[in-house]
Image 1 (cartoon, rainbow, N blue to C red):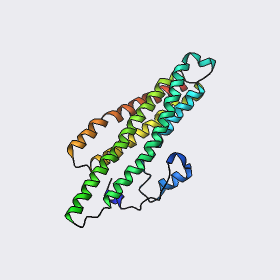
Image 2: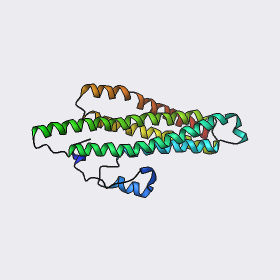
Image 3: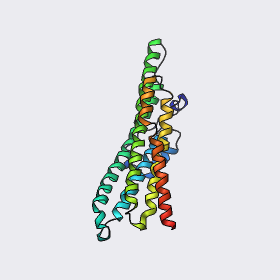
Image 4: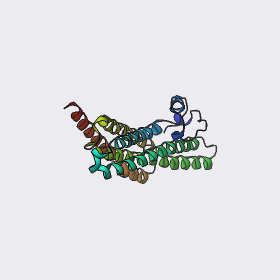
Length: 223
């Protein structure tokens, strides 16, 4: 988060991303406003990945897949929950990012106001880093679900398993960048270290798992 971003025009009020039209969301995303931005886009990547896993699971039903019914039922349930969680994080990202913007706009005419502004900015940055940190973990869960379903999935929709993995991969890598841009602005080294411990290595694991799954699916399609 930079001062330049904070000085961009404030967004008009918007409801939940999950209930607005795609056209409306994209128009807001393309506008000269600070939210929604990359964080919300990352969360929607994860939501789409989870939804794709749920769709594949729902196509993997019936007598032909009876022996995998328990796995498919669990996968469907968890995928639906992850899609909802990702949408919640999209909305959360807008809120916490707006809080950072509001903090940067606080007055600093006196030493007391300046100190209060710095404190508010730092607190807002910490909160802003938490949402993408949660999203990386959600993305990892989406990839894990897709991986667990891949070997038994209906072959007619197997390409969507790869699409789910790639969507989750994009969510993780985008979230990582959003974590980084907030963490570097946090002055408290102990907080920076804690955030680093919470997230270091997770994004790389998600990327590796997603890439491996996509390779498996492509090999299965092309064999």
